[in-house]
Amino acid sequence: MLQNASGYESKATDAFQEVVSDLFDGFLSAEDRVGVKPPDSEVIPPLVKWGNPDAGPYTWPVDSMGSLKIEMSVVSLPPAHAHGGLLGWATLGHETGGHDILGADKGLLRELTEVTHAALLRGGQPEWMAAYWSERIDETGADVLGLINMGPAAGIGMIGYFRGLMGAWTGVAKLRSDGPAEDPHPGDVVRAYLAAASVRRLSFAQRSRWAAAIEAEADKDAGSIRLAGHAVTAAKAKQAAAIVAKAIADTPLLALEKRSLRSIQDWHDADEAIATALRPVLAGGGTAVPANHGSVYATHVVAAAVIAAVLGEATPAALFAPMVGMLKAMHDDNPSWGPLFVGHRGDGGRHLVAVRPREGTAE
Image (cartoon, rainbow, N blue to C red):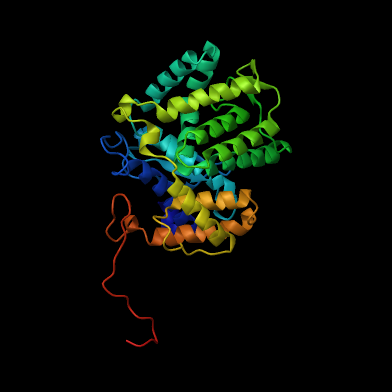
């Protein structure tokens, strides 16, 4: 709130807030959430901030904000991401669509832990593998939810972002094949395999092609895979990832009134079509949302920019400013931000009775 009040990075902040609000509101959509009660701990979209640059993207979920008596999450990006780092914005599906949703429903994380562990054992995986994934359910579940919310852009964006981080940290831009026991995240390569498996479960027609592309990128970096000290073949790692993706995305959950996560939010052909239509607009430097392409949301804009960059339609630097400009325009037109302060945007919008003529034009 202080950053917003002082006007710090005001354009990028509004763009950032629009993405986070869209991701969270999508999970609360009354149309998609029929028969599921609102989250127990949070019904207001998270606030955003430009936080610790050394920590990368992160969130303080609502269940960790109790001591401050704040019933909402706070999502952070490094300050440099106000001006670049396109693939970093693809991680917002993980942070908001993932961690903040998982922390808002009591018992959801515990139930996902149990169903994932049981599914891996039923699938013939050893006990240590079932424990490895289920003990990392917070990060694992956030990965799957990010893909459910943002489509394949969340997966391919994560791979590029992790490679960038490793290049900056070690000089070698390559996913890590090792998943140490003390790391709460799964190993980079198996996270990429999980992304591919999750994309295969989505509802858009090109899911298999995108899943194969993501898996192929992971294969390029896969060395000797070791998870919590156990050697694993790539084939076994992929099998386990597929089981985990199915358990998290498609198991009916008591915490959600026997609905699955993917039944509430999914990536459909309509979403893919909108993102595809936005790509040439952004690649050409445009910031106006094209008409007649259905309901365009902030998640579509980020997905379009990421995929356009990955496919070489424009450079990440050239795509970044139009992406922020389009998101800022959407934020300015979003009734959630006033003057009515609508709780959740949905498909709401203002309809003006008349438009004031520009100065110097005929009345």
